[in-house]
Image (cartoon, rainbow, N blue to C red; front, side):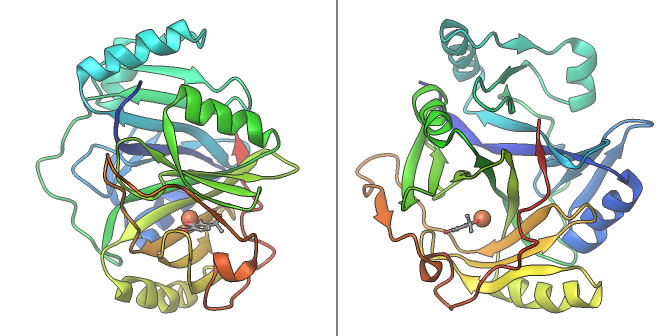
Length: 294
Ligand SMILES: CC(C)c1ccc(C(=O)O)c(O)c1O
Ligand SMILES: [Fe+2]
């Protein structure tokens, strides 16, 4: 089965790439790496060449998800396994790999919703460490998808992609680790009447990052749509806000980690607001409303 190092990057379609590039750099706090003329804009929050990639699109949404597997051997195992599963992995040509600064890379489409998953094991490492600016971003944290065919997507993510369930909230949300990555979730899916991007998360290094973000985002007149609050499932302190296309982003501090072996079992948590925010808050209706899938 596939063994992952981490959720490597998220590629988003944005309607005004200049406005969004400025926002993701100045307001979110990502480091600009590269602008391709009439092409994508690459940002990082690690030594990786990119952890967020913005593309111009007619409609805001998720373009693809980059999954870093443990090593080239695991990449080979993943390719052969996904091919056996009939998912027709497509190898990227040299030109696209050169633009992505990634070695061998291939993509599949999930057969239920059509999300593009990209697999690689080697991405160019930037010489300098990530230099936090407005927020001490520790890493790209997770991606949450709203899906209609919830059970089918869950089956694909667990049985085919080898993601492991960490917890579920009633029959509405399931939190998934990209095994053996230890974080409580790198992915989550929510049962919905529409397939859409719910949010993209950035984990921060200090609780002050959440508190300071609240005031900074207010000063930038960036809509805060939920929090500060505390999530019961992962134990993280959170704050959700909207990007220029009104796609939802989240900062979170702290997250339960699972050992590869002898870890606790997934819990079935009550489907109630206090589980989502133990501090008693409730989300703004604008939260998680914008973001096409694929
Ligand atoms: C409200 C969403 C689905 C949610 C719920 C719980 C956690 C967590 O426990 O970390 C999240 O990160 C969420 O985004
Ligand atoms: Fe989240």
